[in-house]
Length: 292
Ligand code: NAD
Image (cartoon, rainbow, N blue to C red):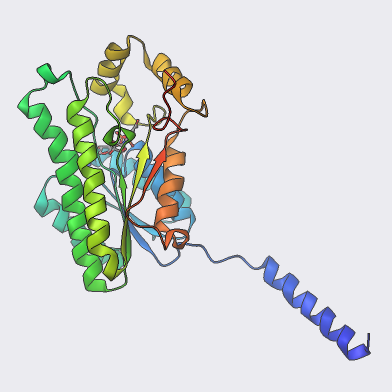
């Protein structure tokens, strides 16, 4: 090689090596996310994933004590400037509006909403009181409506698009025994997401659904009423339920909060810039299988 050309190549290789050593920009840097149910298993895992990718995260939850603990733990790992908490009941219209006002003050707006706050509570249909039915509809369907309506209002005003992720359930697609109230409320969430995807498309607001199968580890749902109800329906205990869900999945694997967080990260990120109105089942292949 002529001397100058060899020099140029060497120079270029050195510059390239320098670039390789430079830290890569984080994929959610500059984005602001609101995660409802942020003190719970799936919500906190999702917040952790977003923070690792450089987002600022507001955790919202009805459980103020758990919220404070989760917020403090995340702030310790990721820095106190990027984590905030707000106590909020998703069924309370005024509290939801107030939480978005806090978002605007603390972080300047919202780019990502993870609507995830929820309960699991059901009974055989003949034992389902109107109060139990309404509780499922209020917290799940209506709660998801209220937080996403507020996100729409703020995202439209910002005029920069946005990403809304609903953590629904595979029970919103498939029936589960003795759980008609929960299954119906989850089905409404999924259909709401489709409707909002259509309404938001022109403004660049994407709306997608992540459907977990049973996530027994790390979830508070699987410790009280729902655990007792499922255990009695399937005549087993918590370990037996986990094994049952594992065995009836195609992959014969359990699903963890981090698996749901990964799917929620995909939809929040630019990797999903062409995805809206979609449903991603994170279920080890349970929904599409009949393996009982
Ligand atoms: P979790 O109980 O660990 O977390 C849920 C959080 O929501 C809790 O911190 C709770 O305090 C909060 N919450 C409940 N009611 C609220 C309200 N009215 N307003 C604000 N916050 C409220 O449960 P999780 O497993 O992390 O569940 C998260 C979501 O995933 C729920 O919507 C649930 O239905 C869904 N899901 C869970 C499973 C599972 O097996 N864990 C399976 C499918 C779907």
